[in-house]
Image (cartoon, rainbow over all chains, first blue to last red; front, side, top):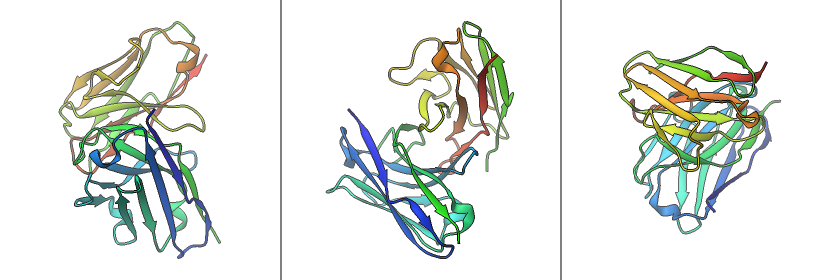
Length: 121
Length: 108
């Protein structure tokens, strides 16, 4: 059964860093593009970043460009999100999601359960 | 950025009734539109992609229609487990994926 499990969330002070992980199982991890999507408390969904199946292509929403970095280790079936210079408005549940295809189509086929990041002093 | 506007914000219905949810795009997204269901403290679940194709394991009571700027998600007869928040999402403006603000379907 396909599964995505996020970890690494927690409480962090503004300006500090945090790295999220997303472990995949039950599917061929290296065959698919992967995304990070976040949801602020009580709010809607916001796409954050994408990485292609082989790590050669990455894209970000404007509000995190220059601060967040997406990466993947296909040998470990794991996706990462390095978050630097965190701001209170980055507070959210962060989900990883598998795309329908290798380079990315935007069809968010399956999702993890999410990990909560709280940015507060 | 393509803005998706969902209406109504809240839909109050009884089990067995038909639910009709709307999603309007600020610019054409062709048929590159998906619908998700989200229950409290759960991750979103893909229901419909490419405007009208049901995802794996999604019951036939869920159907999607539309193209261009106007889309509809229909639940033909509400089951108790269908009361949730529903989001539309476009992927025409690649890779700048955007979501609508959501429609909450609540028990009347």
